Image 1 (cartoon, rainbow over the protein chains, first blue to last red):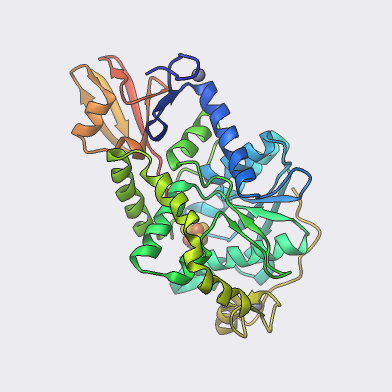
Image 2: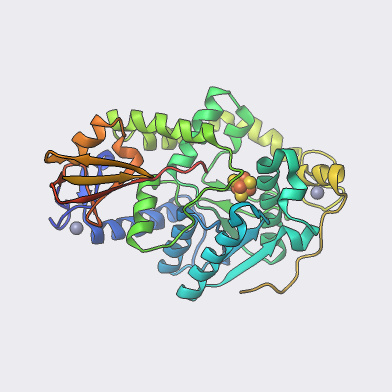
Length: 311
Length: 63
Ligand code: SF4
Ligand SMILES: [Zn+2]
Ligand SMILES: [Zn+2]
């Protein structure tokens, strides 16, 4: 197959767009697509302070690389959750740190151990993965707000979003559907604005970008990872995509166009937002989910955000 | 014979065949993978020649 633009050898067949692209034209396509996504959904602009949540995986490191190349001067943020099994956290942290070092990019690292005196294996116990996700979101939001970042970027790609969308629809999770979007506005001063600049890039495109850019990422998955259902949905949707190219993007963008259907629910949720009695983070109840959990197991919501830890 | 490797699985492919044919035969959806022949990323229509080293990379994560 030849590149539709320059006729060189293609590295990917974008069946949804009915064209193949060579390595160079694919690179241009990715940068252009992410830039357009940022503009189309008014995510952020140059000069704003941009934080990127990085895990060591291909999507988040790829995103960080793309944003830097586009001139957004992004700072990376890694949460070391303290998973010692398979040396997972240490390995991930080393991957992220060496990526930052080799490209001269700013990186912030925080660890659960530093905040709560212990890692997730002790804090989470039976429900480790969901608790870990919650702790990461909590800490990331707090650090983004308290250090004055304008926006927090995550590496969710089109496949991630579509899998979640399918799951939310299959279960008619109306509240979640109301909230699912490429931009989550901050409707509270202690809630950071969250954006997903990769939402119009498929997982395959994201993986290819990382590969062609020589981005070394964590290959093994977390020993406590769940998400088998997400994976199942992704494969299911890819079967539909193979038979009917373009389905994935249509499913997602038409959902966004029809999001007004859920506005009533969204408004109700926004209006009932309060501040957590313990840590001041926004919540719908007296205590935020994180504090409620910590109260049951530990009773401490951690130290203040420090100025240090900049790598 | 072309040697095809995917996450620990190995195939020896005797006949010349294109990537799509191989993936279909093995029940692998081309949307789920990237294929490299002798270290270069290729599209599904690329042909696997007898001396080729083929690597199939799974792209989907649990995220
Ligand atoms: S997969 Fe679950 S346990 Fe592992 S790092 Fe992610 S959120 Fe934490
Ligand atoms: Zn080209
Ligand atoms: Zn709280």
